[in-house]
Amino acid sequence: GENVEQHPSTLSVQEGDSAVIKCTYSDSASNYFPWYKQELGKRPQLIIDIRSNVGEKKDQRIAVTLNKTAKHFSLHITETQPEDSAVYFCAASASGNTPLVFGKGTRLSVIA
Amino acid sequence: DVKVTQSSRYLVKRTGEKVFLECVQDMDHENMFWYRQDPGLGLRLIYFSYDVKMKEKGDIPEGYSVSREKKERFSLILESASTNQTSMYLCASSGPRQGDGETQYFGPGTRLLVL
Image 1: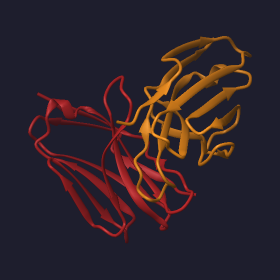
Image 2: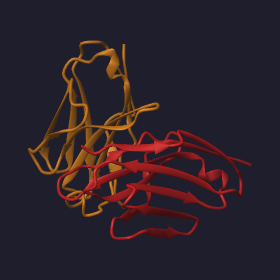
Image 3: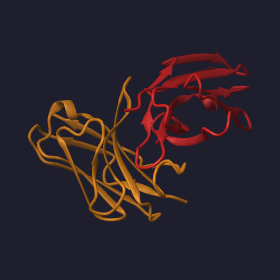
């Protein structure tokens, strides 16, 4: 089955700097890659997703890139702000009836 | 706006008790999921369901069962609670079959403590 590895497990950046979180997946059939953000004490919420027919997707300060050949995808946050501090989870799934497989999460701290 | 609710935010139970965790969604979603979240282990899938009365085992089904009698409700059952089931339990729902890119919407979670 699918296996998703996520790095780093913790990340501290200065406010205004960029943050990058990387994930690798094992199943070449996976074609959907969402990212969820979980603030302290709150539920995970989708922030951006990408499908395998696209190499990059942007939404304001966040972007996701996908390298199908290498089977890895990354989340990029630019101009980080204190409210970006949270745990971020990547996930992957293939078409059909396979559910999402999540990475173990990255705790991002943005230091003012 | 999608709403996923869980019956309890916090629950304390004794070892050996039968525990019911309820999840209800109001968006007529076909798919529902139960995860447990533990520090350093991320979100691990316990069971999921793509239709009423249908259930599939996830990655860690041992010690758990589920029930989906109505489309909007998905229950997680701990037949005989054990201390290693102390965890945060998250329910989620999504629209058509996974793989179409449908977002999973999570409930607020139930923090279960088994003594």
